[in-house]
Image (tube, rainbow, N blue to C red; front, top):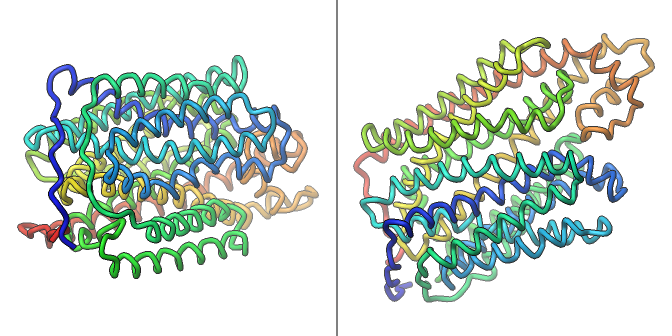
Length: 510
């Protein structure tokens, strides 16, 4: 359906350009960092508010669920009512619900706060890239996106590191306060330096937004339950989510003003980078859960050490994001995306050398290589996606990138956690014979959060010491599988880019 043209936003330069990049990068980093703070310190939160291990899993994933469910809606509302306005609303909500969560007197209040802050994060993570794309002139846009992604990685060190340190030294409430403090800074910089973005006329596709929200909630929740195996609690939500997703596609293809114009996927280059983002996040999600098992379970390292190892990895990622932007300008986006996937595959293969005595510095270097592979992909992916759609769909396309990343990262974590436990239970049976501990109980040692094992501390330690060989064997199998996924993805993406060479992106606003 024809729509009136959207007025161009005021574009930034000089100090305003720098501060806009800082605000958008910090806004995205706040969302990512907060999720890491809670995940790393969930056992402290559970002990402080005295809730059950079953509730622990739900609390730790609640913000992720609501973020995934609302991110496309955040993009649509940004396009309709102004991306800066909606981004500020998200930052303000992060302040309010961050404080509520830190001060929660019981788990019920904490769950409400986490559900609401996840929606706030959808606006921060879903609109930041779109704002960068809108306020920089076309000739500077690719470079600006590269610096924005570098800022996300660089600032990502701050919330997780500071929050983890405060939680360990002072208490979990102080760790959760990092988010509202940084969100206030995001608010102030955005109000002062980021220009207003235009509003796109038209109606809001409420039915489409509800369908995609239901789809993402169902799939995300079901995936989060896969660590317990293929049970009704995981399979039913996934099937319901897939049904809602299919209905969403059917509806969007018939709606005059859809929330997501599916014609953008007719571009093979657009589909290629969306697929690359899916593969990259699947591999990174799976590798993150494997390195968590390795460090925390096999090596008996603290979650603080785990967070500390990500500091150099994150800084290397910032440099890789900028370098990828420059490389893409020389050799093309497709070549850089494929290179990033191959770096991811190489990092998975290097992990095959890990044993119970591998120096922690070597582990940190391999983590940095994995993070670098993901960062190399991010810049050309963002550039191609944002250049493939008109300004009236900037928020939606940015939200698609965020939704794909979050969904497949969670899928990778859940799937490879489930496969790891299944393989461990099968492989460790001989080691546990005569111990009075069933393989299923031993598997529960891996599937629970630190400090919440169903076995007593002595038997938990015995399981880990006796089954270390099995755990390392399982890790090798899964790391090799992740490498195969990355290489297969690289081949498919290369073919899609070759098909799209010279193709014209189909119009989506006839």
